Length: 440
Image (cartoon, rainbow, N blue to C red; front, top):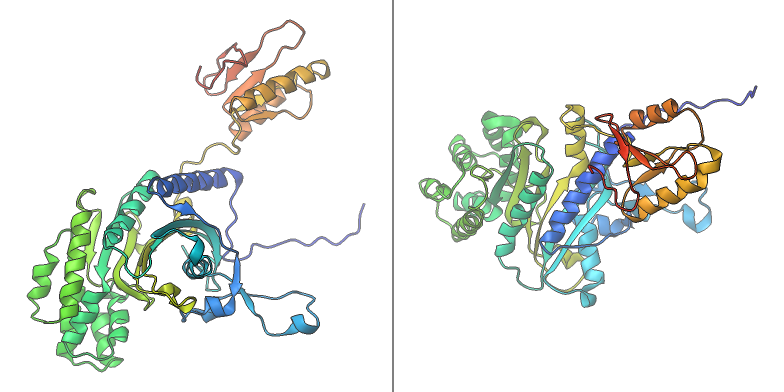
């Protein structure tokens, strides 16, 4: 017996790891997401997992979340300060990608990415340190039509509907409304005020007014007037009259209202209630300049936004001397998948992608069984060969435990017939490997 010391690994907090049957569902989600994105003309790109730190820090405010990269046995020149880091989202790598490949791309450039990202934050329900993000963005040179601001939420609505995860609601606003309104009130530090209003769902009305007064030193009257805008929520364009009734004048405010009306009206063909104009939404990053989005699962409102984004004037401007406005949205796949898995809202099925288990009858018929399995694979059937001859009951039990729907019995002797057993019904019938299909 070996005296080798055994190291018993422990789960690493914030790094999810799924069982095969769970991973199969996640892969089906990815396939559906990809198909929906491509149905709207978006093309796939994949950027490296690492970027230069100067790239990752281009939009600021995230340096405490970045995992840096260093070699364990670094020596000499490698032993300097870290120069590379794992990307914490897919937006910054996309901006860098567009700048570096500018002359080779066709604009408007419509791309999607489905990749892992890493953030060094405290793990909690729905928050991971390693996770899948699914991003779509449209970027153009100099000017991007407002039409895309409406197309992006329409795409994500169709995407989430295809996953069959329950009721969803996309909440939309325009940062010009917030900024124009606050400037119209004479508030100078509009950025801090906008960030406070964006916390309405988290800290409530009392928390917002208290923060505006204590941290921004606003009067109670001004704080109340700020809150009056943030509490406006409608499923149609009546928000215009409600904002006008607040009596604030600003050209930027009027521009934001006009843009939000256009987007909401363009989305009028979606299910009633799927779109909500919510004038508190701002998104955390200050590079958003117009339309902004957040998406919630109606069955799990405490989960927060599972899908967010917005319009930016020139995110790629840090990397190239061209104006490249864009609009995009990011779906937190792992965030959503992990929550539904925890709440047992996903129908867990087979433990493998196998359609058919090929019985291993005996050594003499192994070649025939292998030939039959290959023929079925050529016809698009996923076939697993049992690994050794043995009792049929043991082979059937193996198929049952893995959730394999069909078991194929090749001839046990020369001149015999092929048979297939439907594991759900127990029926066993003759079959021709050149014509058989599941359900036949």
